[in-house]
Amino acid sequence: MKAAQQLMKVFVSRRLPPEGQKLLAQAGNCTVQQWDSDDPVPRAELLKGVAGAHGLLCLLSDKIDTEVLDAAGPNLKVISTLSVGFDHLAVNEIKKRGIRVGYTPDVLTEATAELSVALLLATCRRLPEAIQEVKTGGWKSWAPMWMCGYGLSNSTVGIIGLGRIGMAIAQRLKPFGVKKFLYTGRQSRPERAAEVDAEYVSCEKLTEDSDFVIVSCSLTPETEGLCNKDFFSRMKKTSVFINISRGSAVNQDDLYQALVSGQIAAAGLDVTTPEPLPTNHPLLSLKNCVILPHIGSATYSTRNTMAILAVNNLLKGLAEEDMPSELKIGAP
View: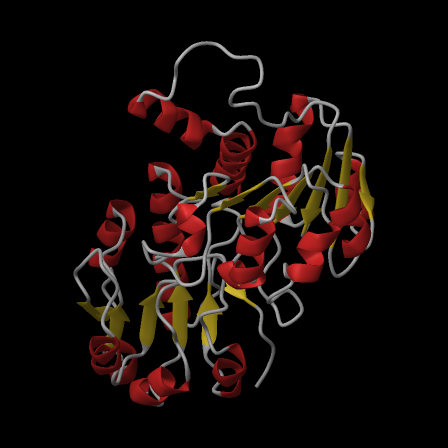
């Protein structure tokens, strides 16, 4: 009985959205130590904070590697990440130690898909460039070919990764009059693809035939650096490239060359390597490259829902109960 009443230590690596913060404050089975800032926790503070912790609530920006796990020590039994992605976690090492992992899929699908469509439209219709022309006096008069971009009607859209988000993007693009959807990934998804009449093809065929290429896959050894010189060389010169997955899926030097040389028409990125992207990065000098600061899930309701799910994953894990959303990484 005494062991059951013992308060467990939790370290939280960032200030959470309000609804999650409120839920965490009501937790009665743990003491919470938190990096109370909107900025990422410094590495030294993370290592100090996790020492002896039973639970860790972290973000994508926190690299949870062997050093952090060693600093935490044998008490650590739950890691809850406020993200759908988990490439910041040393999954194999976590599995070895029998630590459970919670994450936040599904709840950010709609918001991320909406943002993806907004980014695609802003990129292909040159909206940031057009706004700048208005502000700086470049708007002289109506001209037939000035500020022309590329439309979705009768186009072919290729989606790399027809998962939850990829599918939600396709569903939103279909009413724009897209003629054909292509997709590629580790395996075909016939039932899911049937909803939007998408055809499963090789990555090579997708890049060659698509007017718009959208990367929405998870980051794996197979997808890291997938979008490289060869990838861009197969694309049409009029095609638009969009990445909302992970920055590491793209070789940014190769993307820069493809944009500068006119190998592809334009690119829109919500993710980069590193994040934040240095303000002197070559990609930021290009008019045909739209870069957002990783805001795919940035709606008030989505971020609050993510925080609630992350806290519930943490608390249920500490209580040795079923998490609302547990990442199944297998037995150690």
